[in-house]
Structure formats: structure tokens, C-alpha cells
Length: 282
Ligand SMILES: [Fe+2]
Image 1 (cartoon, rainbow, N blue to C red):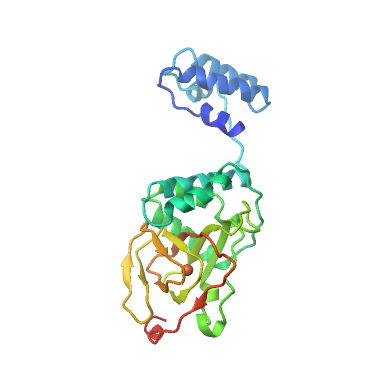
Image 2: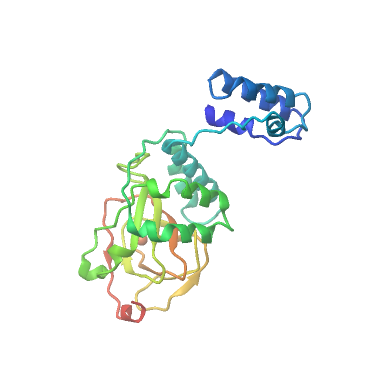
């Protein structure tokens, strides 16, 4: 409730009725002890004409404007999930509608945040990834940026080291937002964020789970059969992998940041598929 009041309070001066809407929000926040009487009086005065900016009234009186409190982690997570759904809603292609319907119950639930620990891949690469996606989707980038360092990022550990390669574990991280044990519990559905350092080969692999990647940065290179040429795909181009479809990713010059979703069979592990050309890319 309080977040909506702070949003109403920040409505710009100008539109008809905006002064009264700001003043109504100011009265509620004052009633909750979040606005001083002098600040409230400024909103009352500014409400007489929609064109008056209450911040100007406060400045004239030597008053500081009210400071909304930092949203808590649950609120930031909810905002991220709303932004994720908004981003998906603009896309078409296999899996998108199914993922949005699997996601829908979580949009109505308050998350239970899981605490994360400092992750070296995130520390090194998240800022460059968010900077790269900002021109295309600034609001989703901002939503990720407000909590990226607070999320429980982990390493995917189902691959034998001898098959996935000795370096992959040190250059990727993922975090599940919706799924078993995540902030929004779900049964046999996973959705989250995946981050890989630039210039990394994620070797050919497959899994029974149908999978959507929505890369938020790009271009990165992909192939869908071992020992075939890689081809570049741009940011925000969805990649749908039907069950057991081989896929490999060669990340580009910017870190690979992507939404991912597994729509079923999430407990069945992925497995590496052999190819003879990995040494060309590693
Ligand atoms: Fe995959």
C-alpha cells in the first residue's frame, strides 16, 4: 500500500486532478507518520492548482522533500517478476504463452526472499551486462540491478567436470526465482536468471526439460547440433529448446545475461554431448 502512495505522491505536476491526487497520498502518508506536517501543508497548497510542483513549494520554505523508504527485498523481487512478465508479454514464439501461464500464480503471491552470498561471477560481470541491456529494456535492467547482488546465485553442478570442462564452473552463475526452494515455490517449473562471462563456450548439452532462454544481452553465438557452425543471435531473441534438443552457446563480447525457464522435468539433469571442435573455441 505504501509503495502505491509514494508513487501517487511523485505524480508530476500538470495533469488535471494531479494536485488533489498528490494531496490525498500526502494525507495518508502523514497519517502513517511518514510525512511531516510542514511537508503535508506544502502538498495542500500545491493542490490548489495542478500546475504547482510541491517540491518547489517545499524548496521555497526551506523544507527537504520527503524521501520514500528503500523498498524491501520482497518488494524488489515482486517488481522484478512483474517486469519479467511484462518483457515476456511482448514476445511471441514457442513456450512463451505456457511460461506466462506457469508464472501467473507467482505474480499474485508475495515472495519469500532467499538470502544469497557474494558470487564472484556476478560481482565481475553483472554491471556490464545491465549496461548492455539498458538501452533496449531500461526498466527490466533497473529491476535486476536493484537486487542482483542479493539473489542466491549458484553454480550448476550436475555435469562431470571432465565433460563440461574445468573452467565452466568458474564462469557462470544462475539463480532460480520461481521453482522448488525459490522465493516463489513451484512444482516442476523453474524460472530465473543465468549469467555467463564473455568469450565462454558452454559446451553442447541436452536435457529432458523443455527450455526457454531469453538472452537480455547479445549478440551471442548458438548451435543446435554438435560439430556444426555457430551462428549469432541478438539480444531479446528467444531460444526455445524442445526436450533433448542439443544446444551450445558461445558468449560474445558482453556478458551473457538471460532469463531461463524449464517448463517440466526440472529434476532430470542435463548431460554433455561430445563434439570434436571445442578446442577451437576454448
Ligand atoms: Fe539448456
